[in-house]
Length: 264
Image (tube, rainbow, N blue to C red; front, top):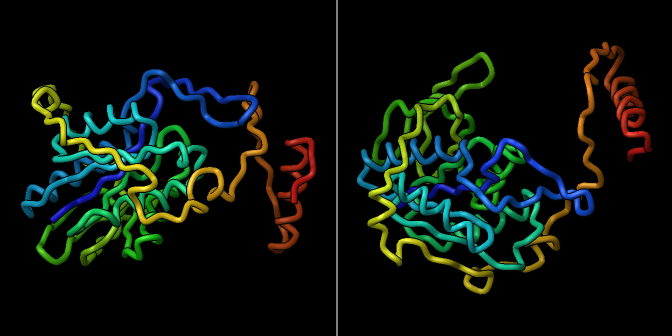
């Protein structure tokens, strides 16, 4: 059976730049696999080794995103699938999750979908749970340890703040993997050098059973109006008391004062 790992291409730099005109992240000419996704790959490879499954990495992005699929194969994935189409551009987390889910649907015999807890560029942590919703999968988030792997279920440990929770999840399911998981293995150049041409395939929008109103900009209900970069030390602590309505009104006022404009 197959274990699917959605991965993301992120800038290979600690400095993330914002396009002032579009409020989108600027694409870096040099990219890498999202570090959190390396923990997902590590856990998927460990599970696959016990079940004799194969790991398939899936990413959405421009054609050069195939380099992160090569990195995944370098870690031990059997195959990489690139979802690439101009129609996918400008997607928010909802449209991204929908597109990835449609790509995953095209793959047969899925046991698990394993996702990193978040992306290191956007940090939302939304895509994994949204994929689970699209595919109607049971999900377990912030998995820190794989305790027992069986043919029909997996016992995991989740880290929830200061509390660890043990659970048994039956397949098919989606797991998001915490960065508290075991250290990811190194990429082996020998795996990349021996990679076959058909190990990475590209699927376009027309290859998927997709609603084109739900992808890219058209399928993205969230809009970034403005991004503010912090200057100096702007931290402050303010105690907000009263009932929930009073607290909400005061929080709204604080945000409006910070932005210098009215909100909702």
